[in-house]
Image (cartoon, rainbow over all chains, first blue to last red):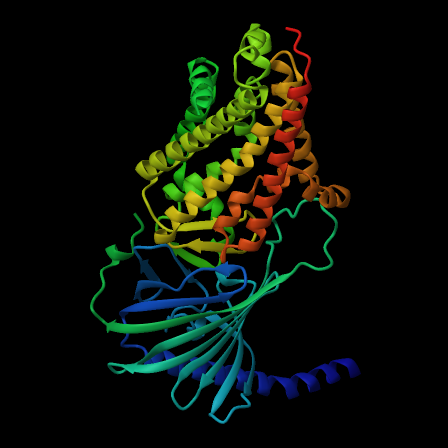
Length: 224
Length: 280
């Protein structure tokens, strides 16, 4: 009996906070959703600079097409590598109903920022955990930390500029920290290495020449 | 020079000389046609490690990539094709019974040997040039142009070489491939001065190349330490021209080491042949 009371007592302490944190999360994500409700598609020129030891490439340029909810197309005459996670702005990606809140805290910065820890409900995004740093004044996602199963860590820092009436990324800096060898890739039968080396580095993506809501057709995104 | 052209004419008059060119033609044409037919599969397999993290656009599987890809097989079949001719250069004369006839002519043994050696190198250059020509021309026709992505399978890393830089790098890579293949020619030539028939030098050369390649690739510390002392270790010299930045210091060192091999092997051949008692 004592144990049950103790359990109920702990629950009564934790539950309001949990409900409160969930509400805060929902409100923050909802505010962003509302802010970008009018954004249906955009086109932009992207410039990518790799600063990764194992990625020896010159800067790359391409045209990016995006359409709500998640259609993306890259057009480039040359070979182009574009980061899938965090490399582009999708206002519909963090929909409140698609995520579960894990924790909410005030970010330790001068701005009025909130740090949300959320996990996706969708099956195809399982095994990931996001930490979003949200600017509550501007309703903008300033940072996205992504942790994935297998020890993959990505942190995206986003700088915005106003294009028409929308705040859209001017520059995204992706910080990568990923294992060098895929878990299912063979590494031969040589002498055991001390520890698998990790690959760290930065990818800087600069956006320019935005064209917003031009009515991009679905056909444009069909892969030939 | 006259002797050299005479030897070259003799070499290219033999049907055996063209086996190498036919073999290269078959290997390259069949490989590139099959690659063209299974282009999607190849692209997705080679880019598998990046597809999780990146959207990749552009013509990755282009003619330059295909050429570099096929060049990886260079150390497997080209040494055999070179040994086939270089191993026959001197011993072939003994087999056909023309060696005494050859040596009673005014030119000295040294001049005759130099002419034969230059012919072996000329043939090696011809084989590598033909290999390069077929690979590049057919590759560009079937797969088109584009930047070159150099990727070591299973590793999260690439070197991307802009299209404008590729022809020069490719030229240097094939020059490096020629330089490393001439060591095989020198070795076959040395063996050819030792033997009275052509089979021994050809098989002997291939045996040395295979043994050295196996030793160079065994993943054990002993063989890893031994590897830099084997000339096969430097046969991948051409790959350095697709690094970013090009490791010139390492390239020059490899070129010099291979050059020392040439000098040593040819000097040995010369010493042996000048002292050789010709009985056939």
